Image (tube, rainbow, N blue to C red; front, side, top):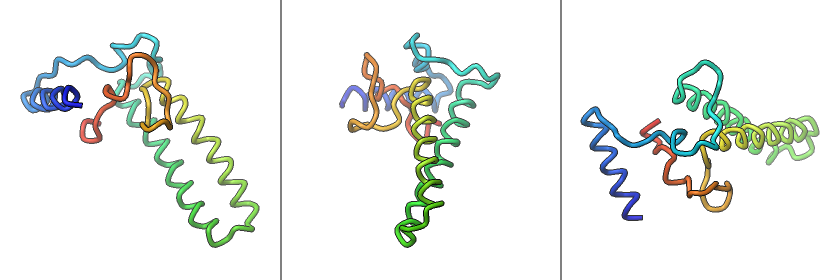
Length: 123
């Protein structure tokens, strides 16, 4: 834990100074697929994360709706379709960039990847 904190403090200082010698997550693990869509890596990362967030938002809204309308078959079907789509997007995202969530909801390749994911303010 201390190592991660110290590394992030060092990276934050380097970011402020305009230099950063840390390796990009995709450069450190050759097994991670790199996006081949003509976008820069961080641009593709942000767009794919945004797509996941859109689906998550729709799932939250449908969950709230279904709490008050549990017999709406069309809403249940839409929820299930979006849940399946979310799983597909999340799996593809994790294959390219590493785990989305910690605490056993996402698997990690070796070496441990959670420490390599960007902090929210670094995206």
